Image (cartoon, rainbow, N blue to C red):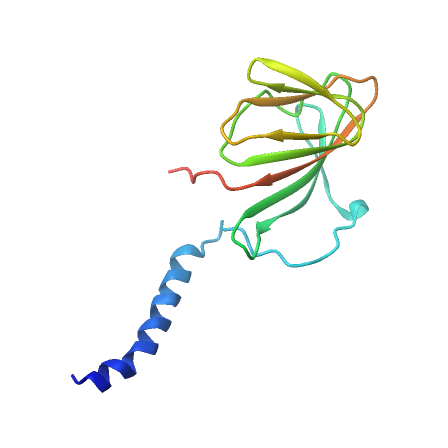
Length: 150
C-alpha cells in the first residue's frame, strides 16, 4: 500500500470512526439534544406524587454544549414534601414562585419564599418542605446526569 492509497483512505476511516462513536453513545435512554421552543404551561401534563406534589415536566435533554438539563415545575400543599431528603450527582436550582418552603440541607434548614433561589450542590443531602398555609410553587432546573445503573 502506498502513501497515496493510505491518504485516500483517511476520510473514510474518519467517517467510520465518527459513526461508530455515535452508535456507541446513542442509546434509547440518552437524552435528545434540545432545540429552541416555547413550553406552554397550561399544556404541560400534571403528575401527582405519593408525597403530595403535583409536577409538570417541562423539558429534559442535552444542550448543544453537552450538559444534560431537566426542568420541571412543582406545587406542594401545606406540610408536604415531594420526597424525603436525598442526594444525587446532578446539581439543582430551585426558583420559588409562590408560598413558603423550608430548604433542608445537611444538618440545618433555611426558609425561602417568592423570588428566592435555592441551590442544591452535587452530592449534598437536601430536601424541601412547604411550611406555609397555602400551596408552594417552584421550578427545578437540574443540570448533569446520574450514573447508569448496572
